[in-house]
Structure formats: structure tokens, C-alpha cells
Image (cartoon, rainbow, N blue to C red; front, side):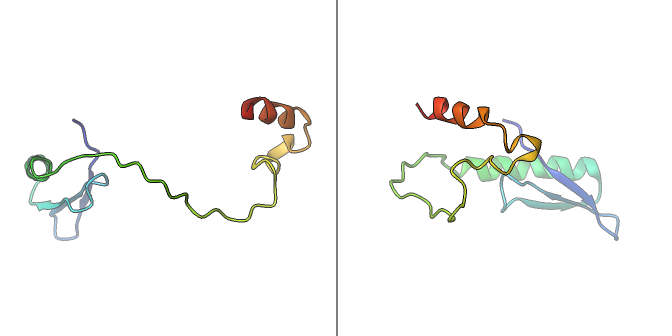
Length: 93
């Protein structure tokens, strides 16, 4: 499995690594290669203790009170194009 990592060089010369997909995975090392290797080990450790499941949640999120029937009504030069309404009606059906 591949993970995106963010490497940042700190003022003291160390390499700081964060993994956006794993917020608890933060690594620091003296070199870039060392930081990447340490990050690989840390990710493997986290994953070996983790379980990935999908939950079906019946609750709906709160929605903002939008003032449009179609969220794209305000969108660019096509906002007055009548074809959009017809297209969205067809998609809804």
C-alpha cells in the first residue's frame, strides 16, 4: 500500500515527516533516507495494530440553508443557461 508523506527540513537540519492519511504518524530523523526508512517502519507498526472497517451510519449530516434549487445556478457564465435545469432534472430521474 502506498502512503503520501510530507517531508519538511527543519532549521536544525533534521527532516520532519508527517503522513496525512495517518495523523498519529510523525517522524523525525537526521537524513532524508533515514526519515523515509523510519517512516516506513512507523507506518508498518501502526498498520499492524489497526483494523480498517466501514460503518453504515443512518444519520444525515446537517445541511446549510442554501438559497438555490441547483448549487450550480451561481456558477460562472453559464448561470443563466436554461439547459442546466433540464440536465439536472434528467440526472435526478
